[in-house]
Image 1 (spheres, rainbow, N blue to C red):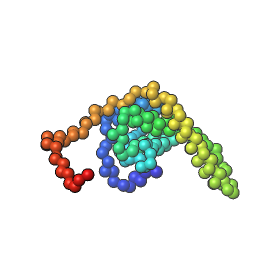
Image 2 (cartoon, rainbow, N blue to C red; image 1 turned 30 degrees about the horizontal axis):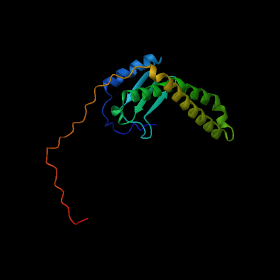
Image 3 (cartoon, rainbow, N blue to C red; image 1 turned 90 degrees about the vertical axis):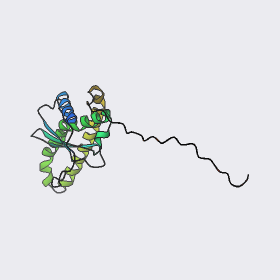
Length: 168
């Protein structure tokens, strides 16, 4: 869970990214969802994270801090994966509701936690597979052209003379 108490010093999300998320929402049948892209980066060990609030049809997506340097194909893959959490995460919610009475039994908390962990792990694998299958069918983001780094030209200098010392 993200710490909201930290002052946000990250640049705002670019307008092209916001437009692209709206386009993907429509294509993935998530039009009724409120989905925000938070400028705060996700954990350093992943490309993106999605926090879904079930029952409210809202989610917050966090991208890694250097996402602007990614290729369009990688941005598409990350966003589609994160948006699919809105559909598939309801499986975990349903399991938690079903297992709620078990939690009060002796040892129930461990059973519930390990069951939810297993469901979340398998759901992540399914999201990976579905995402890989549909990503090529979806449009790429309309990103601004990346400026290429300008290489400094070295002045034309004559090659250095090599001095030989010693004999062979």
